Image 1 (cartoon, rainbow, N blue to C red):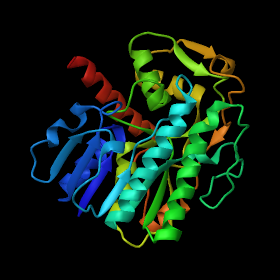
Image 2 (tube, one colour):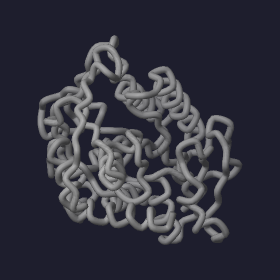
Image 3 (cartoon, one colour):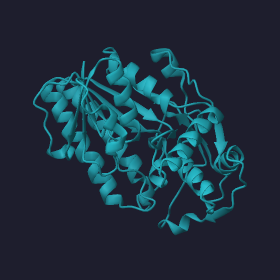
Image 4 (tube, one colour):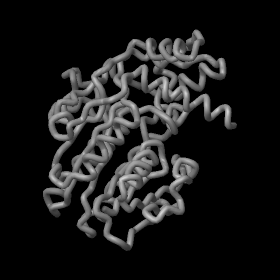
Length: 318
């Protein structure tokens, strides 16, 4: 198949591109490299079934007719960034790609997020469950709102134009090539801080619990959705059932790196007015198991070991 990866030079997109190219698919990556990196995909450039186009996706309209369009582009939770950018970029990109899918009769895979569940306490979080968000006075929820809107818009295109739509809600992805700042989540930040003997920032009291999923497991599940044509209208969680507090995560990474981390607690008030953080975030993977035969191959410890090894190799090579 021909597969268009919007944002395919990023962390998840580049790993997905690798696997799809290896499986013989024709892969088109479109990325303006604002967050993606050329080095993530450089090894594929020149291959017969890979094409890279450096361009803003909103100014791009593919001449060919891809079988599948995957939307991996997102501006994330605005801890240190703009709520306006998060809302406008996420919504405008999604609409542009949905119009492309509609015109070209392509299947559309929207990459969404566990953040849409907000403050729901119906654990494990299920795809058909309620989405519970905080007040609009807290910009923290702009990411979740943009993704909820995008899911609704995707289903509206399915209803109105018969566009084929599948939605994946990712939970806490980590692994090689991830961003080493808060854009990429706590694992990269913690590894980088511990390696460089810096204080490890803990937001809030650190007792909030999260589940994390290794990149290879995410890619395996996503490919199954891309290669299937019988999952229209489905929302599927991709994650693990293994939970850990952020405080314990920092200490575990320190243990795996043979260093006791120095912790620095950052109160939520430092980010913005009314900033909130869910106390727990773990999703049901029953549906993924049933529809995809999905089963995470990596435990948190085995995934962290691979990620730390990648990071150290990165530092050695400069």
